[in-house]
Structures are given as structure tokens and as C-alpha cells.
Length: 306
Image (cartoon, rainbow, N blue to C red; front, side, top):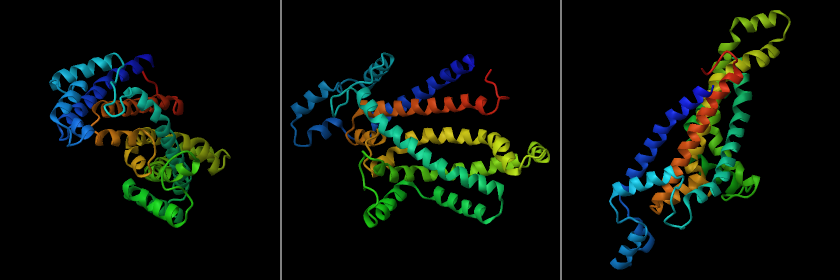
């Protein structure tokens, strides 16, 4: 297990390094000058030059890249151009909100996917199965940037049940979690149905039923656990995607998380903050995928990480 863990961590290093490098180069080559954005077009050339030296943007891009890598090696993500606060402090202050939204979205997805997936697998080609297929198709077809405003229009503006945007209460969390969780629920539902349907047809389920165990108990105690391994894979990937893909949803609902912070940093051309946000999201995704792999042996004792 220890050897496997070290191997996976070693594989993650070039992935994260590649992501950070690409983002660094893209930020410095796309149009837009952070000095122009901060001072405005009316600023005189002397002011712009002074600020550019203060932000160390007057140096060659290769020197800035090496300085950035040196800061990463020391655990220093730099200082935000906009707020003049350490990047790590800003990210950590926003991370609880993003984690809360991701956990709530995961809860919504499981609340929808698990019951419908089990019912669809135990009753194939029934009304429940067709209904779950329809819901899955709708969940996969509706992007967040369309579903979010639609939920606001219906449940906030017309019905007045939930706040339009912001945070602070559970009611603020409902619509963003439903927006992010619906697509994930669709994927998990179809995956669980397919995996559980395959397990139900195995000999050990029929043997358990022949020994006197009810079909419901055989499915829930034995087949369901074995069917969760491929579902867990998708779940881990999707949870990492929730952390990375919350940018649109957080922007729509003005949720104070890392996704919205990333958009604000991109708009301001805040290079250190964008690089820090992307690095943090990449590390979270790698960590979730690693945790998912380590959980396999808990669900199936036959799996060993040698």
C-alpha cells in the first residue's frame, strides 16, 4: 500500500506541474494588462511603469516563471495584485464555501441517484426504469449555465421560496446544490443501474435466494456492494469535477467560493491568484482520485494495491 501511495504521488507531480505551467503561459500571453485594469486608461505612463515595477511585471517572462517555481518550492503562492493579500490566505478563506457546496451537491446527487438506480435495476423495462432514463437524459442535457438561471426564475422570482444569490443559510445552498447535483445524479443513476443489473444476474445472487434469502435482501446485502466499485470510480471523478466545475454555478449564485474567486481573478488579470486557484483545484482533484483508488479495497477485499 505504501509503495502504491508513493507511486501515485510521484505520478501526480508532473500532472500538476504541467497544469500550472500551461496556465502560467496562457495568462501571460492572452490579451490584457493587469496594470491597465488596475489604474485605468487615464493613468499616465509614469504611474503605469511604477506599478509594473512594483508588481515585478517588467521582468522577462522566463525570470517570472522561475520565480514562480521557486515560490512553489517554498510553499509561497505569491501575493494577489488586487487585494495585496497572500494568495494562500485568500484561497483557504474561500475553500470552506466551495467544499460545502460540493458536499451538498454530492448529497443531492446521491439522494436522487441511489434510490432510482436501485429501482431501475430491480425492475428493468418498467415505468420506473423508463422514468429514470428520462430524468437521466434531462440531467445530462441541461448545462449549469442554463439550469441555474431557470431555477432562480422559478423558485426565487416566481415562487419566492429561496434567495436569488448569496450565502449564509441552508436556503441559500439549495438551488446551487441542485444545479450542480442534477448532472452528477444522472451519471451516477445510469452507472448504478447498469452495474447493479449485471450483478443481479450473477450466480451468487441466485444462490443466496435459493438458500432462503429474499431477493430484496440478496440485492441490497450482496449485489449492491459489488456494484458500487465502478460507481465509486465515477463518484470520485465527479466529486473532483464538482470542485473544479463550480466556477459557473458559484458565479451565477454569487457563492463566495474558489470558483467565483477564480473568475474575479481572471477578470482582473490577477496572475498570482489565478495560478494559485488552478493549482489548488488540481491538487484537490488529484487527492480525490487517489482517495477513490484507496477505497476500492474497502469495498472489495480482493483488490490489493501492491
